Image (cartoon, rainbow, N blue to C red; front, top):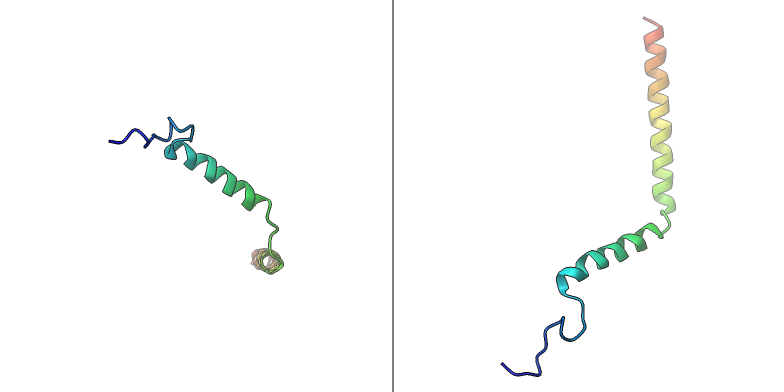
Length: 65
């Protein structure tokens, strides 16, 4: 094999297996910094309202028995 082909370690580069966790952490951190879309926030608000209404209705039915 030719001498000009160095391994990643010899070339001063991180090994691919060591690069994966670092890249995943970078990606995760970038996702955390992204804003939540307004459409998703609206849907979550509607879900909360529906859950509260269902809980009130179940409570009213329980007290009516």
